[in-house]
Image (tube, rainbow, N blue to C red; front, side):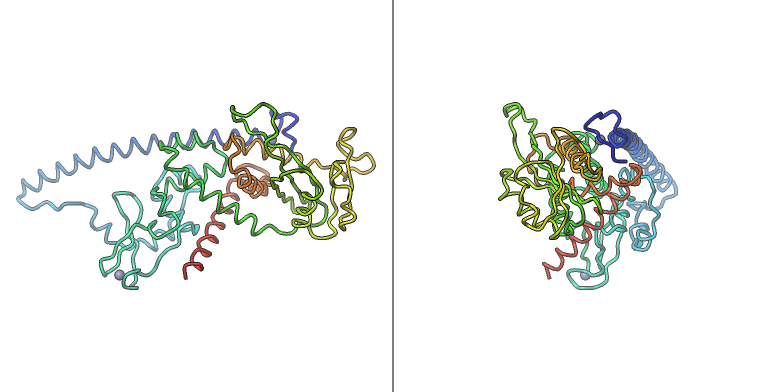
Length: 384
Ligand SMILES: [Zn+2]
Ligand SMILES: [Zn+2]
């Protein structure tokens, strides 16, 4: 699947696939939303009509009308239904439906189920809230709260469907404006959640990054912001990158300069001693063997691959630069919080090894669900 999109974007399978899947996602989701909206209106219309007829019939028969028809549903503990609910395979069907979104969040551990009341420690039940389409906890003592209250999602004032839409859209690389349009909401509503997503994934990536070993390609690259206020061609930030071939993992870090005293400590921090390093002929790397790192170079002014051995090249890290710049600029033109975006990209980079975009997206979703589960366990430990 790895093709070099720097050379010809239109021939890069990954780029074409990404664009196609993303466009399809947007179109299908929009369609779903329109259908849902229309159905909601129709439901409201029929409900009014139904209530009118009911009232007439009740009056005619001379008996009293009860206020709602949903009371029976409200009295059923939904916990087993939610856990056993079969969720549609298509992620579009999930993020356009409040009920499926809530079930998805519970089943994947994005929301941890509570079993006991915070007031009386009695057993609580999960009840369907027909008004907002998700769940409330209720306790015999009278305590009742929305199932997102007292969770990490509580501060964002978003329902399950919106939380899930932002998570998936943001991580599959949608632009802020696309997410805004889809949710018919303002930046003020979803930016705080986007911030949490970046923070949680970036911290997880750094904490769980294994030491690089075997053969590692290194390179530096300049990241320029596309902001109009900055002078053209001004180098904004130098980023140092390392790519481990065996596990195909990448790490990128902003550096203040490209001197030996800056770059060597990063190599020592990221790589196991004795790791074989491949780079271009940048002078800062000359002393690598003195630090215990076997070192091979490619003369980029003459070749892309060392003519003596085809293994000696830095193409994997160079392709990663192309990807990183393309993806980060889509969501972050002014390169604000670049380091966090770099971590996010490095984390997402591992899923690009899958053969097709659908498998990649599924793995990505599974990945972030695990991370958020882990994050909530840690938060809990800190609380206790
Ligand atoms: Zn590409
Ligand atoms: Zn209680």
